[in-house]
Length: 596
Image (tube, helix red, strand yellow):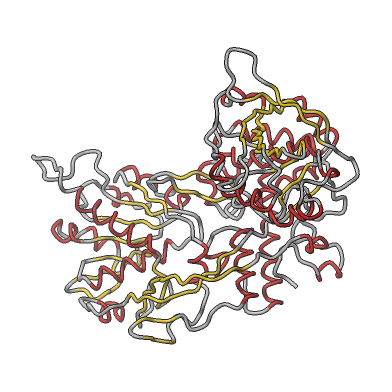
């Protein structure tokens, strides 16, 4: 740490430099659609993402010669780092704005310390290293604490020497008031919780570790700031091992762009496994195809075990802060609120949610239904329940039959009824489409004149794409398109982009769009008024006019139970859990795109 002190203390030379990264835009995501099994033999059913033109994005990198506490001498400076730094500076200064006149101490109820928390593997320790480097450059007294026995003190007269916590406790209050203590370790020593310490502690750690520091947390009334999950461009920026090998006009240029194959691998991990830097950049190797396959299979095996635990625990394994334990964080994601002061827990990705439903259904259809009932009753787990509900609704519609939906808004007088028929089959596969162009190819008549008679009444589902405007669709007549949206939410908005993309490629003979919200029966009271949806002009700005109507389709528990008894519309009797193989030949296949 002394080398770091001598390099940075008071040294105002720029250590944070810009560099550019071409970030490819991806047309659609390598996500499974409902009913698509995840067995390695079925890898050909996944389509790799289509990469469009790249856009140059500017990122920042911190580079020093000495090793930072995170174990590196360079790290990606996320834009949020600067936001959190500013937030902490404000918190540290304002706690002295309102003091007790008799003692000069902050008033009772003031946040004396701060926690910087978030998803495991998101880079909280990297943020502490960034913060340390910034404070050293500005000659601001700082302690980096690894444990009570190993604290490194940086100030005007102490060049990063190792001291114990007991030495810090003996400092004068004037010295303490200038010090920030940065740590990612638990704080069990009762001396840390004393109100009269005037320093400012920043703990960058998991809530699980904070829970082991409860006395400090309560005694110092520490506030919390949750770090956002990584964006796709940040994953690409953090990927290259040769950030700083080329300088062009005082700007660090990105020396080695990822190959197209590497982009597919990274994007597959990002979308299917989650927006977690440690997963995408460290745990799963991309240096060779064999290393990628091997490390990915190990990781998928770990996901399997967490899924088993999630199912056997009835969903309790991701309740509250337990997402941060080793037993659950690969399948659950902490999502910060808009103000970053709270967070919610949800299943990490649609791909993992699909797998949970598939595994639960394979183990026991009735137990799977009981798990759904429990998940849907818990606000923290409703995101997991929503995939189960969507799966059951797809099975229900996929079996076919006659359906009746109430027109919105529902007034005192009897509501208008939409009656439609879906042609089902117990043996034929579901009808999937990957892109709007793929759907148009399947349903448009010769010369793009109208809809084929044979597709009217068929139920279509998106596959290998994530359409934010619909979960399924059907043509009830040659001029009418029904868009289904399955939801457990109390309200649901529909964005125009996905619908416009469909109408741009479907015949202009489509003049009616019927939005059908499929909701559980106990939720129908929330769907009596019109939802916030698209306008006709937003989905077809030119061409023949289109009318848009909204309906509510109730999916009762009895109907759901009947679906459970009948079994899923598409079954995979030989399906293995992800990463599992039954023979040597199975190892030649993979469950995710981008693997040969």
